[in-house]
Image 1 (cartoon, rainbow, N blue to C red):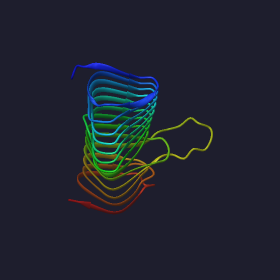
Image 2 (image 1 turned 135 degrees about the horizontal axis):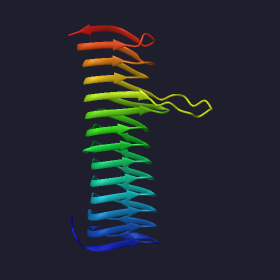
Image 3 (image 1 turned 30 degrees about the horizontal axis):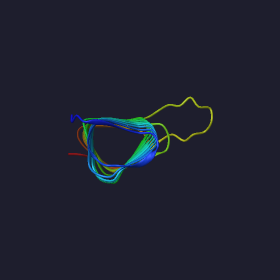
Image 4 (image 1 turned 90 degrees about the horizontal axis):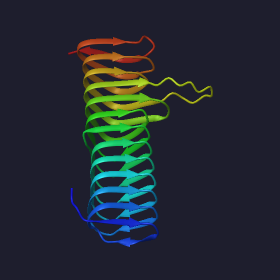
Length: 235
């Protein structure tokens, strides 16, 4: 990654972009131009008015990127907003991430929540939190654990897709999470607490708490008697 001087912001102010080694923001900082660096740590509030490219990013406070964001590794424990596209190779979200366009990478681990106004494409997508994806969620391996609230995607496609409700030991009444999608398509599909218009796959297992419009399968279909499937078609 690029080498340059460090930028440390403890108070508030606006700073130029360019190439840095490490950027550390503990106050309120605005970066006015494209920036490229090895490490970014945000403990306070940051705003980048154009594009950001970084090797490693950690957000403990609030960060906003008005342009596009590219990073090899990112951890968000606070909140982060990207107005453009985000290419985040290894992503771990414990807080909240909002992306205005597409989101791509290799490994995604969602324990908080993400909202994406476009497509999401990863090799592995694992969520024990929540997500709202306005486009297609596509990954070789998709593992979704539903704790509470509603997760949704326009379409979901992948090789292995597993959606399970997560058991809770909380004594008070928090509703179990649900997943909603128009189309779910994959090779091996297992679903719980899912509402979908169409489910299409080779081997399909419909578990508890599902409402499915139609299932199209080529090899195998099993389903929980308590779930609803309007039509079943072996192709």
